[in-house]
Image (cartoon, rainbow, N blue to C red):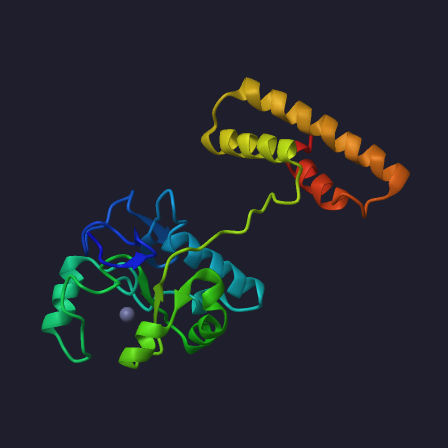
Length: 217
Ligand SMILES: [Zn+2]
């Protein structure tokens, strides 16, 4: 089991260098640990960091692992790097790449951004700093994704979540119709209320936009 912990919770895949569809999730150009009930995981954190980088004007191709073995690193790749030094390689089956927790980022631009902003996504340069690698960042656990539906009322949020999930899975068209009907009525209530007391109160503008996006005819 991975020896990397936060508090007393273990981070990373169970066996160094063994990755599955379950224990890791895709990032553009690689894979990272997919987390568990207690932790959103390195892949989600990385993908959110990347989205923030792009939203801030960075180019998508800059915010990538350097190569196919520069995020989660399979045993075979670790063996290869170990027997083909330099550059120096970690003892096989010990590194954070093997636990699905580290990325060697491709560009200085993304590395610089991560130095400034990585902590918001629970990525640290501490290990990279120690070994003199500007490109190496590790996930330290505890990432809390921002809830994109936080502006909704609890009922609206529940309906939107359920509808989004059913649409993703293509299931239960009857239930989807019911949800769309409820959300449409709620959207109209918001619109009418806004005619009386304006759009700026009770987050009406943002709530209306979220419901409209799901109920457009
Ligand atoms: Zn590295």
